[in-house]
Length: 118
Image (cartoon, rainbow, N blue to C red; front, side, top):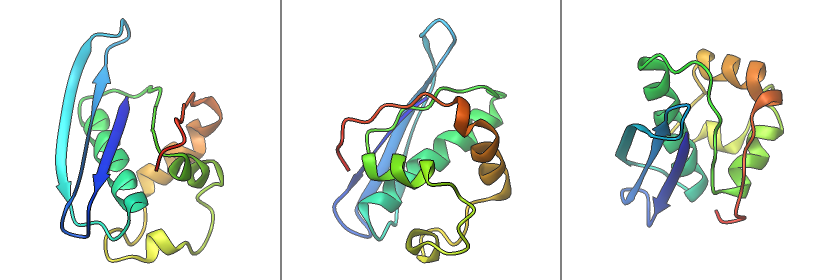
């Protein structure tokens, strides 16, 4: 799964991505508009949307690619933190339990790339 987001302001954010089959072919694509307070929040919301879509379509094993180094750093730092500015925002109060569980379970097996852009 690859995700990307664009942020121009709180009410001018969006994101999308693609979920590919095992052979690399297109399986599902998605796009959405968000109310996001920061570019990082938009990236997280795009990732959340992609993970929800993958789960809904029974994709249980994913390789995730994001283009935002800050998001990658946040995910690699672990989600056991009791407080993080991003999760305290009005955009996203707390990651759903299934997202937290998926990250904890699969983070060690996820291959991700980052171009260094946020």
